[in-house]
Amino acid sequence: MNKTFRRALAAAFAMLLSAAPVFAMTIGTFNIEFFTMSGSSEDRSQPYTPADMRELADSIRRSGADVLALQEIEGNATMRFFTATALPGWKYFGNDTDGTQDLFFLWNPAKVTLVGTPQLYYANRTGIFEGRKFKLFDRPPLVARFKDNASGRIYTLAAVHLKSMTTVGKSDAEAAQRYNLAKRAAQTEKLNELAARMEGPLFILGDYNSPDPQKEVSFPLLGLRHGYSFDNWNNNLDYIGYVGIGRDKLGEVKETETRIRHRSTRRKDHPDHDIIAVEIRD
Image (cartoon, rainbow, N blue to C red; front, side, top):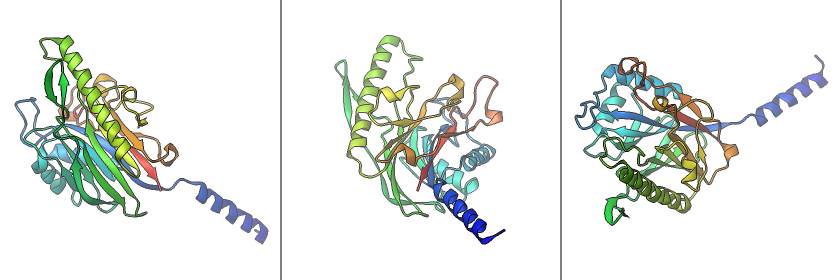
């Protein structure tokens, strides 16, 4: 191999390396579906066993996510046991209430660092529906900032879980549907406000509880192009919104199956949501 050819080959290899996308960190969302150690008579959820938690941890590792926005969590005790037994070394922070609908962040400190203290937004806001006041967010958005350890860049993440459109169990389905629409409209208005007021790259990610939430928000959303994040309905409810960063800086959205066999049936998967995640280019 002569010197000229070696130089040309080295130059071509260098060009390939420079053209290849370099990823900073991977973010994602996961509705674990009533993630509880105790079970709940209110929603008839079954407690997650240590074996279940190990399967969840395997799914999280397979997803490649460095940070996950989690929905439907039963507080700090569940997350403390989960990380201690199934995801040692991982950290968490969330809005611990008395229910099984808490929002949390879960992250790998080897890859990312939490910056400051996460904050709830619009926790005490109310709205009006047909003359009656309602609480705007039963699950207020939880906003946190994370630094990618490799690049030092900081990204803001807002975990969300919007109002469901279901009318199951309601005596007046039409009134329930009107209420759902009114509450969702008020919630998405606040998400649009949040997107406008935050500085730097922002990701609004979670369970949007709608197959087509792009019609409701002013910022772009990323979802699965193929397959379903909510297999039980052959639907997509989980999305990653992005603000202050170009689409070219993000990879393709990837899905990780989270079905736990012994909790599921032939007709229904449990957990009922899969993990969706996206890589951020450095």
